[in-house]
Length: 101
Image (cartoon, rainbow, N blue to C red; front, side, top):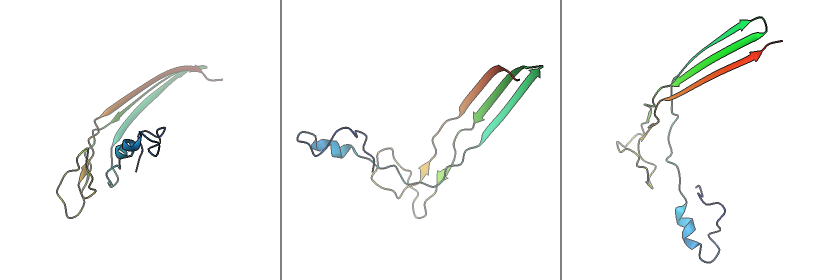
């Protein structure tokens, strides 16, 4: 169980409702995502230029629990559901220049 407000003590008078904010992440299996990576390094004498790029594909894994066909909801108190990876694609680019002695 996670406490989103760790600096507030729910045992203090007036803060009793803070304990109701605690939550639990839905229990799920491993999520598998594919990532493509490419890079190039150009070097002339001691000068170098490096370029890299990554593309992480959109998530499509589903934690298919036996005995249920219900999809997990964002706010749910059950762990007997099928959690779907809803992550979108991600891109990252890096450029660098340097001296290589």
